Amino acid sequence: MTAAVKARPRGKKAPHLAQIDPRALLAHESNLRSSLGDLTELRASIAASGVLQALTVVPDGDGHRIVAGHRRAKAAAEAIEAGEWPDGQPQTVPCLVRPDLEGLAPAQIVAMLVENDQRADLTESERANGYAQLELFGLDVAEIARRTGRSQKHVKSALKLKTLGDVATEAADAGKLTLEDVAALEEFEDDPKAMERILKGVESGWGVRHRVQEEKRKREDKSATETLTEELTAAGVRVLKKPKDWPWNCAAAKVEDLVDADGQPLDVEKVKTLEGFGAIVEGSYGNMRAVIVCEDPDAHGYKRTKWTQYKSPAQKVAEELAKREAEERRQKLLDAGEVRRRFLVEKWGSAKGAKALLVDAMRAAVVMPGFYDRAEEDLVAALAGGDPRDGQTAGIDRLNRLLVARFVAAHEGNTATVAAGRYSNREHLVLPWLDRLVAEGYELSEAEKAWHAELVEEEAERQRAIEQEEAEAALEYDDAEGYVEDAEGVRPIEDVQLPEGDVEPAAEPDDDADGDAEPQAEADPDPCPEADLDAAEPDAKGDE
View 1 (cartoon, rainbow, N blue to C red):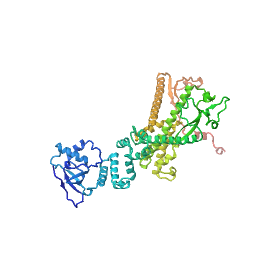
View 2: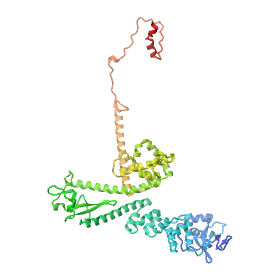
View 3: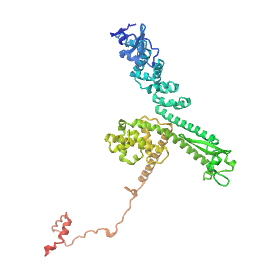
View 4: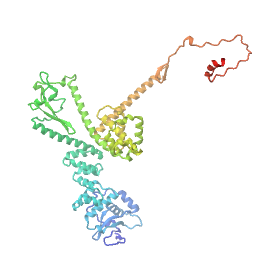
């Protein structure tokens, strides 16, 4: 085993370079990397050129302990043992010896964090483990942030990751969960099932944000339901569990949809506390409302007014079911819209990002200027980074950014309109817009994916109809005889017979004409007929 070769130390505690046999180096007991990973490529590189970047080590008794460079040391040792070391080179690796770190475990861990971040990022869980070890040595968040050059928010989120469980840790290490998302997940730390729903099957941070938005909405609904339930109970109103298939196929009915035997509507305030009546709580986004119902209208002799419509019960069920599904999808698309807007601002809400859309924005302003009326001012302001009304005094760069902001906001406004089920004469722009967002890195929510699939099918059907219509028109044209195509389309050719008076008679030959007579020259056409008219009317003064 080759002995260590040291460079000129300038002091007892001064860092210095040394050449040390990698097989003699000791692994650090607090190494942050949980796995050294596949060393095949690194070993091949070392076998060809040796180790070019120095390891960081600290003195440890008669030897040295690795602070940074465990993978290089292991790969180098394997290359030596396999006889793959470069010919003519000593079987040592360059090491930066740090006597100043000897016996200082916190400082060694900080060195691991900083050195690895400067070379190749640690996984989120490895970094979190490092911060946790520093906490055990008495360092607070502020001190950890100062020593590692990270923000306190970053350190707090990394430490929080350790408390969220294995599912969150695995998602973070796989790159599907950022430390920014970890902060948002803290709200659900007390709800393992919600945490599992959020993280299950996500592919990126955007997928996490979609799920977080949905879970937040559910929490708002739950909290509002509990508050309203307490108020109803205090008022003497029974709160009923929503019946199966409510409200389209169950015994209970809304009081507002009932009349008594005389055809008179019921007074909600008078009946809500009576036997056989109660309240069902429904709504969304925290806007919960109490619907007073009668559990069995037939038993009380009431009639349902809704059944007087000219629809069968089966049709009614289908209609109500469709409304429910549409409302559920609308709510989910609203959730997705909130996340989608944040993506738009992140992607194009800067001067640099806006440049990528400038030509498209200009073209839209020229071709369909009315489209910009759909832009939502709040989104325009977020994208433009300021008051969108300052265009009166803005320079060219600011104007370009404002134009792109309105272009993006107009597309989003159009998309939101169609998603809500309202009419838009620009509905055909939604599909290519969603495709563009996906191409730019946006992940569609489950509701958006289903909607996107519907839009794709609708567009395919529209194209098939156009192609069929064109094919039929072409076939009719090819088979037609005696037809002509002009600006008015394809129409039959009509033979027009001119009246006899409109036919110019042929010139009669002159029997008296001398065949040898010299033909007279034809008069040149008068370039100015007006002059002849003037000549035909002599000046009266000239005749006097």
